[in-house]
Image 1 (tube, rainbow, N blue to C red):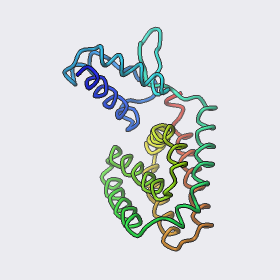
Image 2: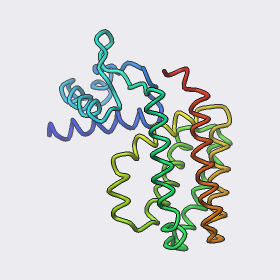
Image 3: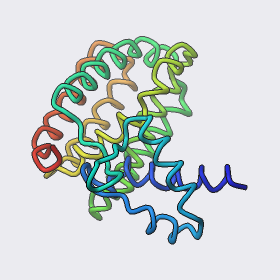
Length: 214
């Protein structure tokens, strides 16, 4: 039972961070989380220690646990790693993606556009994450899954911050539409070019708002 409470607290806090409900530098109040989940503070503290180990939160001497603020060096490296990893996936996606997966991508883009119109950032973030998850799955590569597994949450978190920038969500969904078009044409060269542009635009949007969180 204690294990269930800890994972409940862990998932609640982690989702709040990567869906940008808790902002970088924001204090996480253990008592409030415990009250919300109707559990004691002990599993909440244990969950925060797990998230500290994952570098999503850090312990401030004065404030206690806060959402981690990323340094400029960390951001530069995350985006560089993402470009390298996703560049690796291009031939696998183009060669191995199925018609069903392409249909899922189309549905995802349509759904995301609706959320952009309604200014529903949380669901835009969810759709963004699902779009890339479909692409990752379409590689049919176990080695790739093993490599990316420890980075997916960080990528989603950083993506969420960039999406919060002015016109960030719209720009990103437009990028997904272009990626989808290249996939449908089986055009690996265009797909890679658009993918690298998409990641670069994400970095630029993050850079435009990072001053608030660093």
